[in-house]
Image 1 (tube, rainbow, N blue to C red):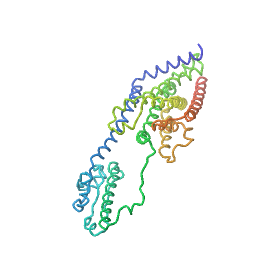
Image 2 (image 1 turned 180 degrees about the vertical axis):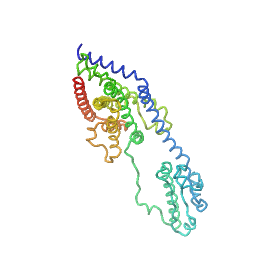
Image 3 (image 1 turned 45 degrees about the horizontal axis):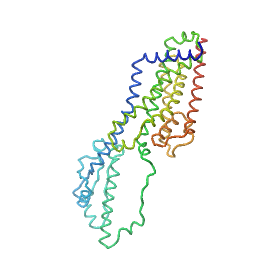
Length: 390
């Protein structure tokens, strides 16, 4: 039997062993399938809630009776006015009040008539996301009232308000529709990476430290199987499980778009079969590399428990590295493509933004994955030879 046939035999045996642990396998596969729809449902629920809040056009005022002119302006702008409840500050801290509160001083109207500048207070809580998101809308509304009063005051004195505005500014956003959507959906790439690593974890631990703990590794090494066939057979089975999880995770985003409740998000988030293919081109080499790394980490351990503790380092690296893109305000850097996990996250973010990537950009992380896989499998082979000698 040649090495290829031996590797295929080992591959089928390891894949069958992984399939026998049905409970663990079903949990991994089910979480992969449900991840896309669940994440999109949660995200669209948040966006829809914010949109509903904006459409309500409701402003909360404290001491509204002290400002009839402001009340008149708000009603003309088709905003509904609600009196601030008692203890609104504590309610806001407890996230039971989701609107910012405009506090009107007692002498507000009198100060306007005297030509003074009364001071309003806009109360929000930065830890209360709902009140924080509505603060800007209310602030723009109050500025509109201030501008209207200024124009009227100048008109009474026969002065044109245009004298105070020597220029006009028009905003132009260079970000496309998908780029703006990626600000919300960028976290999806991060969760896909975690799913790929989680899919490889159990299979990698069971085929290495698990067999050592069960005492089945030494009898396996006594069989007339070439070492390279044994290593590639085991790695192929682990990588196949991880790749299958990657496929399920990416494909789940396609039907997951059916559950989007926000029309705006549904229009901006375009994830079809082309995006699935681009994601998989990026993820499949990473799945192969991370499978080899997890096997290398677990191969030196004597028990599954010890291997789980050591593999936490790999999980931590995969979790932390993509955060570089989030905290790096200067944008993409060339070295990002040379760092595993960070490179895959960077390329997937480009796909979500609708920018895609070039063959050169894909080639760098692919080369890193190949080198990482070769180094990890070489280490696994040395460990297996050592176990055979003992």
